[in-house]
Length: 363
Ligand SMILES: NC(=O)c1ccc[n+]([C@@H]2O[C@H](COP(=O)([O-])OP(=O)(O)OC[C@H]3O[C@@H](n4cnc5c(N)ncnc54)[C@H](O)[C@@H]3O)[C@@H](O)[C@H]2O)c1
Image 1 (cartoon, rainbow, N blue to C red):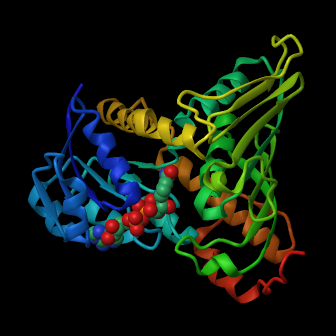
Image 2 (cartoon, protein in one colour; image 1 turned 120 degrees about the vertical axis):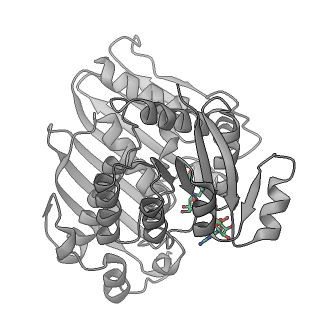
Image 3 (cartoon, helix red, strand yellow; image 1 turned 180 degrees about the vertical axis):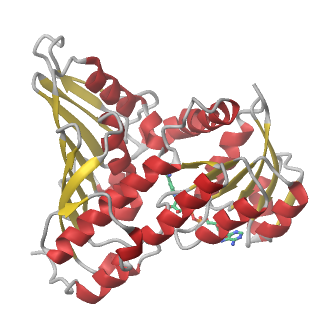
């Protein structure tokens, strides 16, 4: 078991979760430097954490520290330039945030650069380490649901916020089989000007190569299971089989009706759930467990080529491709067969900005 030197860009809200995750694994990682454009805020946030150096320039940090692992936690518009820096400074491991890019072309370029330069890269779809979602995946693969037929994901937040997470979890619950074709609907241009460009609503239907079908909804028409304060946690993954179903949500709840559940529906809250605090289950689990599990697997993969991380960049690319296909299907009014050729895909966000009509207010 080796210990890896890490340098990180981004000490914003999410960046601090990565910082704390690396620091929580002192046997596996040494966080040697952090960089942020907002140096004052970074220094305040890192106070007392014993991180040797801080920078305001990512390239200078990489040149001077020569880390094994480069982590960047920046807005979606800052991706490819950081990956090029990872290549230039020869890192072994790369960890970055979802969405993995803002166009399929960029996503493919990132995937190809990582492949060509032997960089083990992971994209933060770390909610799959939630106990609730782990239980769904285990139930789905145990045979207790019979043969899996359909998987459904619902997210209140938009495609490039939570849709990218839950498409990844659909594929994970389905044993990482590839999608064959997709049919999608999108509408509403308002969120296309957000830092996470997305249509206001997306509804998608996917057939996987193993015959399993999936549907996904993200955005304002998606059914809500929680109150508005829990918006970011109101995401649900449900797996249906010939003999039952199992569901889990970001808040930590799990329910199932299976061959062996005696006909009862089981439902319970995950560790740390506090119903008086919105998103409490997720927040507690994330702080204590999720990021550690996610980063520990990166160290395991760096140690051993056969222990490929479940959030690896190839899987993330396929999830991105499926979502892109859904948007193309919606705009072209047709079924879209995969794989897509990134060289033939125009910037889908630009196209949706041009083509999606403004929406009347919902009555
Ligand atoms: N996986 C998850 O569950 C999850 C949760 C929240 C956010 N995120 C993702 O994390 C990413 C960052 O979100 P956030 O909320 O932390 O944003 P943020 O604005 O709080 O932080 C981003 C930080 O990056 C810094 N930065 C940007 N470009 C830089 C550069 N070139 N050099 C140095 N520093 C730079 C900014 O100064 C800022 O401090 C987004 O892609 C978001 O989708 C993921």
